[in-house]
Amino acid sequence: MTRLQWRTAGESHGPTLIGIVEGVPAGLQLDVERVDAELARRQLGYGRGGRMRIETDRVEILSGWKGGVTIGAPIAFAVKNKDSVMERLPTPTNPRPGHADLAGCQKWGHRDPRAVLERASARETAARVAAAGIARQVIEAFGVEVFGYLTGLGGVRCDPGAWGAAEGRRVDVRASSEFLSLDPAADASMREAVDQAREAKDSLGGTFEVRALGLPPGLGSCASGPERLTSRLGGALFSIPAIKAVEFGLGMEVAERRGSAVHDGIVPGGAAGAFARSSNRAGGLEGGMSTGEPLVVRAAMKPIPSIRQGMPSVDLHTGEAVEATYQRSDVTSVPACSVVGEAVVALTLAEAFLEKYGGDSMDQVAAALAHHREELRRLGRPEGVQEG
Ligand code: EPS
Figure 1 (tube, rainbow, N blue to C red):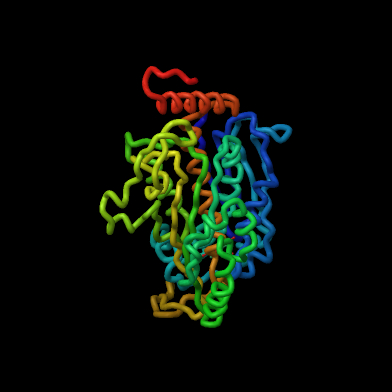
Figure 2: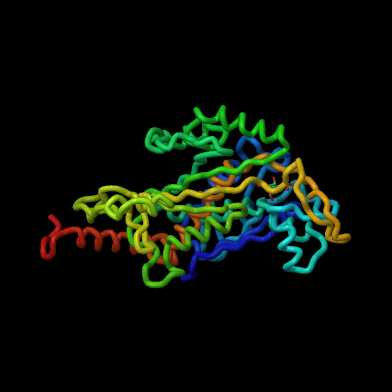
């Protein structure tokens, strides 16, 4: 059995983005429309730039399936760029503060920021969303749902109770917000913030939250740091360009409360027939493992570094102080980032899920999960008491 792994390649204005997802069990009926729906969602959000009007991202599956069903082999895919103009684009000489331009030139010894920025562009996240669109179908088949939504933009905060209020209609509520939030009543203020930032030739950041429902307890491990689900989810979210902060459950607030107001009581009962929690302040993680409660993670995205008003920079050829060149850009892409956040969380959970219940086929995974569920039920009964 191959561990679930994925890798992407491709430049923003190159011919195509590509990716490989390895370790998807055989026997999964792959829903390509499901992948395309996520790609289309990543293109949404008020405040995006001209590029999203050029592209219509679609996945093309190139290997690893037969008759629409996975065969256990690596799944290669492409998401083609319509704006494939890299060789014709000008060479900027002045790196943008906030982007990878300067650090990348210093790393590889280029005087051409384009040789860095084409790969560093957040366009790469289209390939990640496609990879996740494939991998998440494994865990969705076992009842795990991963759901991301915007929680704030440019200082405008969405209703913190929006998740609860939207119960049962979350997909529809999120689709009705042009910022992909669960609080469409905040859309008008966010639209105004975007328009004002555009007027001021500036850009905006924001926050989003991702929740995962239906996770079994015990994914990840407390045995070694790198195996902790917390560190893996944090690493996955920090691997998205422009993410500056990640927090789980209560997050930074844990530092200000007493222990009794931070930890979640363990109580009898619960959906798994085992034990339940009196609250979920930990955000579904304890000891680096899933608790079986919903996973709750938030992240903050900084404003986009391509800003029209310019920022101080230096010409890499003359060494003189200049202004960073403006490249066509979005005012904000936090709504899209919430889709990418959801995608990387889904990928990480699929990895951890298959590590625990891994098998070469979906049937083998189902058997391992059923076995663990039975063990959880036994653990929830007093010793010696038979199921009755
Ligand atoms: C993006 C495509 C890019 C940008 C954006 C994300 O297109 P272009 O560079 O042609 O305008 O819109 O990239 C960035 C914000 C960035 O800083 O790199 C996409 O497909 O999401």
